Length: 280
Image (tube, rainbow, N blue to C red; front, side, top):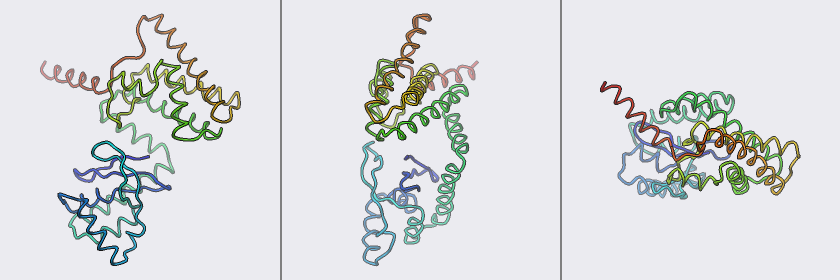
């Protein structure tokens, strides 16, 4: 799990690693110093701290994070405890408010782990702020729950995360829509790596995605599918169930379920609708 949090008008990258948040040190330095070259500032500070035998540097991790060019690149990161110590070495009037903000950000994740409903509420609010409808948000949240159930089944059944998860997901999507997720993104003209395909699906597309994944979970349980190959078969069958339902609906309505509509276009249409109403 990774993402961005914002302090003032500055973005700070973070990643969930070993059950805690790790933050990009360069981003934190940029917040506190307003340096034109936060990387150079951190390199010099790092060298000084090394010479002093300062513990934060020896405990500093290197993890991959999305860079400005959208590529995953290794960067120095630290957990909240380590950052507090590094912050002490940076003279800045922003240090105290930043430490309070940092503690709050860390505590919010602990809250979410202890009570997942809080995480769901925060996610709903983010989608509302982006302009999604309440009906769409409910389907998206339900889809997340269905997806979590499916990946939980895969883990229990010996499917390896990342590559094998991606292959099985592609099998479900291909059987449901006739396209893998990568092909679907291209179809919807989503070119940026951070554009989540499901965030750009229509209500019907979300419904058939859920049907394919829920069917796959049920088939895997019924067959007690173990290992990658057996779960691949379950994914293909589950996807076909959703695919057949999609084709039947398209036959009755004479309209395609898969559309090129994406939220970028939908949000622009809504902006124009609001503008026209204001002009009226």
